[in-house]
Length: 258
Image 1 (cartoon, rainbow, N blue to C red):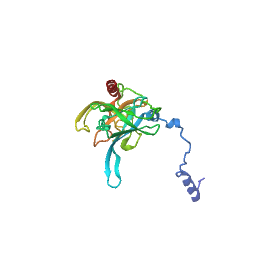
Image 2 (image 1 turned 90 degrees about the vertical axis):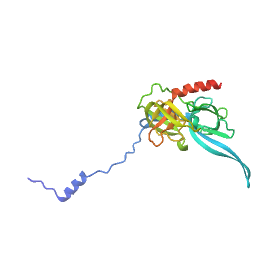
Image 3 (image 1 turned 120 degrees about the vertical axis):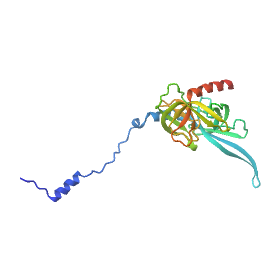
Image 4 (image 1 turned 60 degrees about the horizontal axis):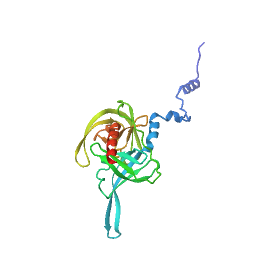
């Protein structure tokens, strides 16, 4: 006995066999799933990363309004809080030329509280591109020192996180890997001299103007480097001063400053 299907039955079967519209899944994804090691590391260090703004005070006379004072922006960068007394570590080139200028103004903006305070240069090392600032905040201001790691056991390919103030976009987070260690680069410093920096870390985490002095941290939320340079006309080639170098220079600078 032959089985025959009517045209209407064929159309119906074709409809059933066709694509079924996807249904939206409104089931919320638990935070425990979205909270990756990167999220936890950023949360750990965010309060310890600051933005730095530099300016020069200009005095003049206007024929209509008389004497005036104006602050002219001179650049910006990033920094990390070093201790509970408000010392901040950054790159020397971020504050270059301001150390002996009475008209220079330096401001540090904290993440928490989200306020801007004046700062002063305590000491610096041009050859290692490191400077130490002191935040002149009201008594009782709480500072969150960044957890210090080590650069002695870093692994090529491990995940690293850059946090800083690129183009004035404070607390920008980028993620990459440690691309290489012990890099040597030559840079024309702001004073026009060519300086050679040795033993730098290389990373492909995005680093842009304004990131200088900011933090390079690992997945445990510990500082492993201070971002300080990028290779021009390239993508994914940034450099950082290893934290062990930073600690050695700071020990020397702060001892001499006492």
